[in-house]
Image 1 (cartoon, rainbow, N blue to C red):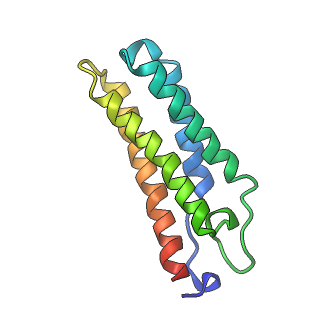
Image 2: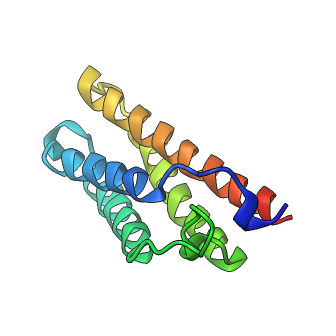
Length: 129
């Protein structure tokens, strides 16, 4: 399928922003994250920030709604690695014995947004095939 013929995709930017906001929220709750919290949040922040930075500017190819930054296969692979860090550390924090309900909700939201980002990457990959 031609990239120009693909249906409009959701913007990657809002998902990346949501991941950054979620990690910032966790930074403010460091005392509620257990022993692994500081290390996990540091890596999550680094990954989410790198992801957002690599999407700027979020220019789109002519005739497409797909950001040029995600059209390169190597970049999509890099994005998956960054997303994997956010998901992995979210799962690590969810293993803590006493995760508060609002913290658990935020961690699950980070996993959901990460999954949606990867789904959109898959859509771009499939449309390029």
